[in-house]
Image (cartoon, rainbow, N blue to C red; front, top):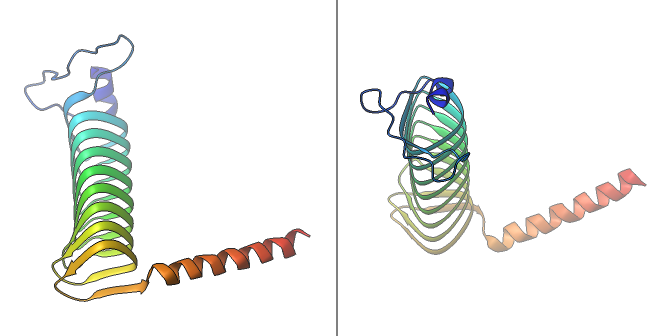
Length: 192
């Protein structure tokens, strides 16, 4: 376990003692209880609580993640809080984005403030002013200002400002069908 910590250049909370629960099965490594990365790059991280500051990781699997000025390729967690950070793919029960970005976000509850997200799927989304989302699919959307999305698929949308979308569900389906038809014709012409 200490070799893994040295590889990541991370430090443990406490006085240098490991907070790692014993592995239940030999050969299967138990997650690290608490891990803090400060100005370090790590590969794959598995922890219960992870705090990242000015750090990066390829894969993060943790119960709770706090990121400040950090980034990750893939993140799976119960609770994620991103502050001026970015992630390519995030899967979480609860996600909070503050001045952050994500390519794909899937969560039960999501809050976006001054953030940019390519695709978001959530049960409940709270959108604060300054957030921009490419495609938003949510059961409930509450916005403190404008809702800015290219495509919005939502059950209940409540906004204090305007709801600005480029495409609704019908026009997005028509555009997708048109694109598929053109692609099919072009492939036929080029291949034969």
